[in-house]
Image (tube, rainbow, N blue to C red; front, side, top):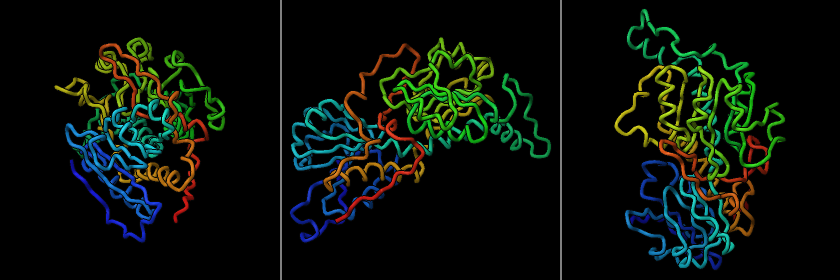
Length: 388
């Protein structure tokens, strides 16, 4: 266990209203999200409350931390396990703010009246931009041409377009975005701006009006193979949705379809995808943190109809700052006597039991909130936190 504590406030600065904000990570924060610590400390520095950052090591539990007893707010970073035994110790707790990778069990928290918010909003812009980059790079065969230039810059030979994909323009393509909320909206917005036809699969709730300004059609998952030129798997709002391209769906996609994955875990039947990709029937571009399927190598790696990135959208300084700001803003609001931002709030009924997946299938299970449905994503969030 490693404890980091920002410069302590003097007694006059702390005062009688001082409460403890406990920031707990899984020991990988500095490696995975190096700007989070500094940004969270900076955002919380002006408040009259104590801040303590603890990095857990193997076997450490929240309930064993001396600071847990007096913590009023907890910010969880990474895969931090949090159960009812931990909660029993934390009698002063009023809010839990969590990264999209460390969603605790919500029901027992909310039975105690403890607020739960997440930082998924901080990821959305970066994921949307990476999705657009992957789409354009695939359409224009950027990676094969780059490799050809490296091999022979005078007479580059990229070869023929061996997979049955159409023109290199996004304009007029039929783009189906699977997964509603902030990320899905931003991806749809970017694609619509260049003239693509947008269709949305949103299994969280009926939010047709959210996409009216994009002139997007809201369709069912079974309708995707009928028209889609490009299928983008974005993050769902409720992690329990079995929002996947299973074998049947992968096999139903038209030849030449481009699949783009910008999620925390893969969300596709890997075996079915591999079969069709290696037959040059599908194009796949991915920026996903989950790399279990890569163990031992994979024949899809290195193909000119595949782009694989290791989740770069989540690791930029800007994304780290957005996640940190989202978490810190909510904690500040609550400690200042207010309420968390409605679009970041997680409720018990929005987090359903995870469904079991068939062999070879990776579910979309990252922690996300239903709150993005409460307002039109893409509008700026005004931060007007009162500091005393």
